[in-house]
Amino acid sequence: MMDPASNQAPIVITGGCGFIGCNLADRLATRGDHVSILDNLARAGVRENAQWLKSRHGDRITITVGDVRDPITVIDTVKHAKAVLHLAAQVAVTSSLDSPVDDFEINARGTLNVLEAVRLHNPGAPLLFASTNKVYGRLIGDDAITRMGQRYQPIDPGLAQGVSESAPLDLYSPYGCSKGAADQYVHDYGRVYGLKTAVLRMSCIYGPRQFGNEDQGWIAHFVLSALRGAPLTIYGDGCQVRDALYVADAADAWLAVLDRIDATRGRVFNLGGGPANAISLLELIDDIARLSGPVSHSFSDWRPGDQPWYVTDIGALANATGWQPRTSFADGLRGLHGWLAGRFAEQRSREALA
Ligand SMILES: NC(=O)c1ccc[n+]([C@@H]2O[C@H](COP(=O)([O-])OP(=O)(O)OC[C@H]3O[C@@H](n4cnc5c(N)ncnc54)[C@H](O)[C@@H]3O)[C@@H](O)[C@H]2O)c1
Image 1: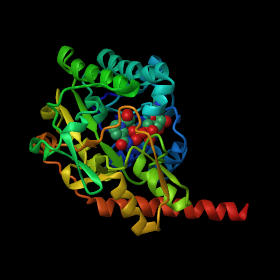
Image 2: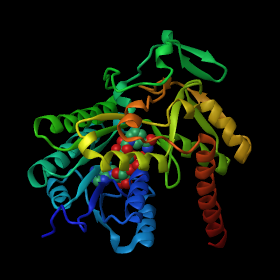
Image 3: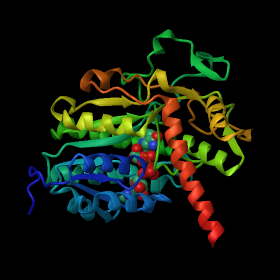
Image 4: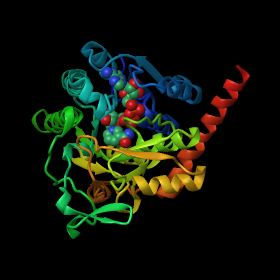
């Protein structure tokens, strides 16, 4: 039986074949960690990420195709882990509205399975959780924002640095509720059972290995639509603002929290690109047009729970760990565009040969 304290003990990543998870796995394996992934491959395209990881790291990464809803599989995966990074989730607000029970079972119950497995079988292992800015709900009303050119901005100058962890929770949509419940369970297991937990409430993460679609991963979805020449639907007026964080910087942040777990345990951190990397949907369309040519788009009604403005205050995380995002949005977008354009070109040449 492997001792979780041994150097050979793996860092477990649930959802490790997904976009953020596989970038984290790649980073950990590159620096010499063993990684054990639990993923049910539910997300379309992520099998490709699994193959990419295996081709780069061989036996340093093991992949168990299994479900966080199955407590036995979860126990088997985490009981010898050096640490657990819990990212597996149903990730789309739209799907949560269609199937709220499935969303709850995966996001809330699945997280409880991970917590219980750690509490009962490996209580010394640090556990980091991928939460979301959606736990803050709509955050500001129409009377608290103003339109400046192609973007909204808050009237309150106190929000110039973005939204901090002291913002009140306002769980909105089944996805917001299930992730919010999981977020609170993870935080509370740190308090009541003394587990080494930390919660990362992420804004919009983007970059290579993201299979974005209309329901989740909007930056990748916009770039892909431009490459395919497919028309885009903008829900709302396109002036809604998000701060975007390049995935390599997000992986740095996760590692910074993990590597300083004695200082970061019990904490909740907002994680995003911050005010310097805030962008509206219409501004993104202009940026993509400069890389790929014009993007045809039309407008439809706002989607439930959509925030007109959300920008992360990254101060708490920066103060606790020294972490800062290093990739400008312009560079990050070029990185994502280059990766998606390469895949698109390969796909086209395969189709031409078929
Ligand atoms: N991408 C973002 O901008 C963002 C923002 C905030 C929070 N998050 C959170 O970060 C995490 C990762 O997001 P992502 O963008 O990499 O999404 P993703 O869909 O690429 O990755 C999620 C992974 O979880 C797996 N999965 C789904 N259901 C599962 C189950 N029942 N059991 C085991 N595995 C399962 C999927 O197959 C997929 O590989 C999620 O928890 C998400 O809620 C992401």
